Image 1 (cartoon, helix red, strand yellow):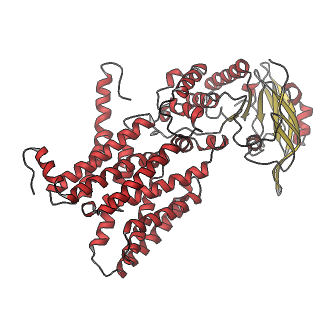
Image 2 (tube, rainbow over the protein chains, first blue to last red; image 1 turned 120 degrees about the vertical axis):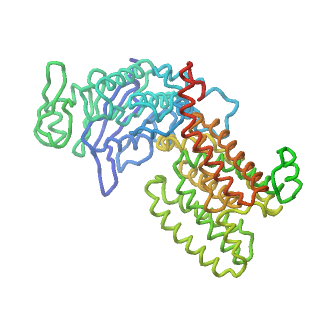
Image 3 (cartoon, rainbow over the protein chains, first blue to last red; image 1 turned 180 degrees about the vertical axis):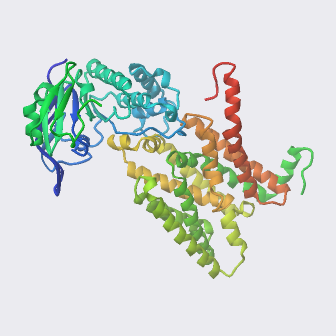
Length: 265
Length: 288
């Protein structure tokens, strides 16, 4: 990993709307080249964090800085992969075209004589191991294949920060592991920072540098070892919870069964 | 008039008539516009919005006829305002279908009122509903051409951003692209293209030039550029062939245009997959 270089810093950040605070008092920093999981129950405000980073929403109070500046829409250093469903079966458009648009979609004009985007798209498809999908139609891809294409679309503009909103939903255990290995490889080889929203932290544990745990209107941040302890999660949830570990290192949080799913599924 | 043995002689005979020349000129421009704008209509799943715009245009045309103005101006005004309204309703087409339908019904009702107030010929109503390209005036041909050139220039400017915003709106928005503005530009493009297409196929048959060619082409190619070219070719063939047959047969042009477009669709929908399967038996399929 490269030098510890802070790219996201937040101080006493309060998110949501003045009449409806989603979470408050978040102070954390995230460094260049870190793989970070954003975990928490449904509706805890995980996507809100992404919207703040993308400049699509403003903080209620406190500060958030990204690359030493306030977040603004359209920052070319950030690529965002929204939580998405599959394309309709009849979307007969080849994957390569979507990846190309990730490179040149912002440019005006037809770009008839520019093949730069085509080359960039092929290169990045190779990086994510999806060259065989280049000419397949988006509507015909499986969930795991689509996530590779979305990752390629996000990477083709060479960002330094990747925001991935629930890329693992709807994937079976094998595809989930393949995608995580791929994302981890991208983070390490390109020195990219990745923030990944997920429900279940266990499949991510082997790869993570940091966890942002959002629950109960509060945010806890640190290494998995720091955050995923009985003491720290009890403070976060405001009730006594216990973190149990099995022989393979998987964790289970006991005491908040109804409010979220952190157990292996 | 009947067909001779030699289609070339038929063609020459037909084009001696100035009204047929005008019909071909306007028809060609409209087919090109419909083929291109139709691709974005299909891609954005805005068929219903396009349908609604043409019906909103109906009351505009009827109002124009009532006050003695060129119906195209009424169409342009009403479809543009309607397009802006639909764009303002929001980005998710699925959420605004009911609202669009409500306005559509009201506008059709207004159109009926305007027509009943108009004491002229009933053929005016008929030609707005089903198109009357054979009677198009030279000044309308010119107007169609000017509008066509403006639309083509505009589309080539916004082509990539519009494509991106149509396919992947959330990502486009996060990248700071003006997705709302692009939505407005798109609806205005549909409004203008619809207004001129009404001259050829009428309000009720607008889909035959705005949706059928693009939806057919989308089954034949996976790259936007190719889909658009195929879509334009289908729209042109349907329009030209429709005009040609209608000159010799006593049936409406718009009937032939819609039927030819439909036959293209049926062929591509049901026959082409079989050919493709048959071909792939010999190795890699080359159709893409």
